[in-house]
Length: 285
Length: 246
Image (cartoon, rainbow over all chains, first blue to last red; front, side, top):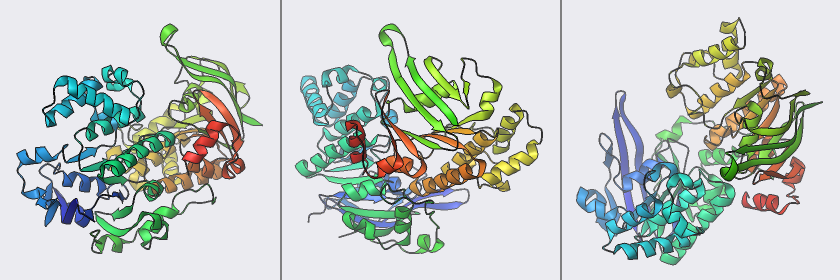
């Protein structure tokens, strides 16, 4: 399997008044043309991992790694100017909440066209046609109207699909989706996932899917990294997630209410300090 | 005896051309001590029912009765002693510059309690926070702890009916389990009646005895949890929702 992305020994640190806080500790993994899920609670460093790949962590935050290779080229060695050619064009990121990632005072059409024209030398009319086509690809009805609309006129699900459309126009090799569906309903969630699934299959994209929803990840991804307190505690195939070995993963699974197995009380996760002490498991293939 | 009875409830926003009918002819009944769930996609009007009940959505018509007493446009003070609400986002529902003590103390004061000090201590114990959280500010608390404070605030006037608007959707799964356990314990301890809104069917299946499925402002199906578990929904939308959530 070809490796799109190869990360080894990634650390993200933030100096604070109480000393240096390690948000991500010694994380290594590879990404092929697959759907890789990263799960964990809030504060486990999963979003920080995604941001570190794009070098979006600003000082005083420190990113260190042996290498973050994109097709054999280390992203950490690139200049800020070269990184700009990577962001959006080769690696895109969909953020959690469409409300905060769309510009509220620009029409959706203008935003998509701007994003497209930044990366290619297309004419305005070409960009418009391409934007319409992308909106249709993410199954938005009546795309002409949506192009003229402002973000506040859109529902959460539509906003998220617009974000995905915007991120996919430059045809990136890797899409990092940071909790793309947690602001959405179950029925809309399914649609958004189907769209991403189709794109991974048709375009051969690599997808990093960051989520706190274990069942969703087990259902949707090929491989799962489970993160706790900044480190990877377990790596497993998504369809074998329910046979996971690590007590943290088991605890997370047991804390979910289930329709088919009713219980009076839900299990509460008891945390073992040893989990955060132990070294990271490598997710490299 | 029914704790809450809603009949022919319409709620709308805007007027004339811009009128949106958020709830159309909702009717259901919640018995005392029962836990009732409202599920549906966003925009289906489930939160609007709670808001209309609390007086946060003033344009409504129909009949709503709590504990046998009809709700009028102007709610008496005793109403808020009887009914309290917990909101979805614990990050937004607490005043950022009021300490936990101030939040709970003010609520108790407004409801005319005099032994505020002892009650604040008891409320914090009830929600499993304890004394050391009393003088903290919301930014010093985690999401789960904030939701516990919000629940303590709702419990302060000793209500009988608690309206829960997606109480765990902003929380992690492990914290969700803690809050759901806490709510179950409190219900048993204080003999509370719950009306719970959620888009997560498994949470509703865990917490509630009966539920209503809503779509586009209308209640399309009323069923009990046994039917939910057996996947026996009759309305096509309810079936679709069940399928999607597995």
